[in-house]
Image 1 (cartoon, rainbow, N blue to C red):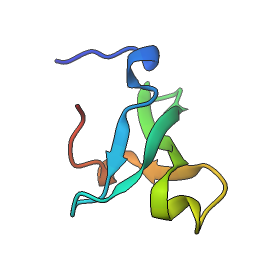
Image 2: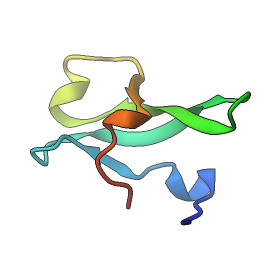
Image 3: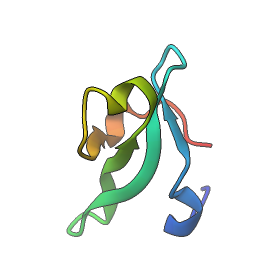
Length: 67
């Protein structure tokens, strides 16, 4: 099992499957009953910022890798 604190995870780049930058991790949505991350909050960057001004929510099942 790999462990990561929220302070380590904030600011991690988020990319599409094709490698395009979407933004950076700004927070998490937790399921407190199951004790797990449900969604990642992403602060948009680059071309995405022009389309979306608010925080993006990406479902955990859509995450391909975590580095």
